[in-house]
Image: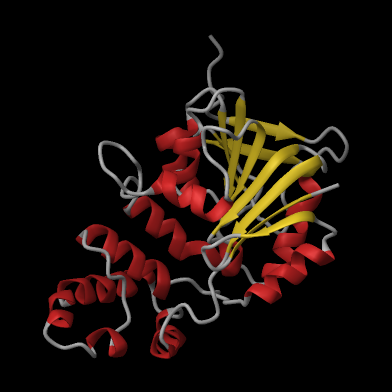
Length: 281
């Protein structure tokens, strides 16, 4: 039985560049750079969103945001921005799939522990702006809630399209321009510059005060936060909103223009704003 390579190097035959394998994960970047808050987030909440004996809605979320069923996807699949492996977890049980997930952040450590040792799953640390793959390598590429956290979301999207084989599909989900009340963006002027530990403390405080919204209807207007009933997931989602350095929001027409400019066809605008899927020729 083949074993995972825990430590070593990958070497490019064309350019002789070497990339280390650390704790079973090939590393194509030297740092997590601007994604440090996600490194903390997905290692602190490494199993919160996994569908293990609880209904976290992961399968339903995947269907809603890609228009695809985990049981129907086949071939070689890439998740750009895999986090702690939430979606890889549900897809990896499908037959005839080879899954590759990468993330800029150290969340790959959690993803490797959760799903990385499964025979059809491969985890890497890499930058979506410089994905370490040959063109026309994948049957499906998806990125859910990730590229709006990059410095140039449109560029990030355009780097993913050439990775598709002929007839392959790409599906993305990004934040809607009017997703949150304006005050949350005002707070982010400060929270996105704070140490992640302070933002986490702020998120936990808001979560503890959540009961106030039942008595004072303006609480969530003044203090926008997740409204999930589960306290741990409420803290996670609130931290996820306030902590990232970059966070862009879009309109459907704006995202549609990306798909059109990339020459995609069979473009489908899905019901969850903003989710979209298209196919290369």
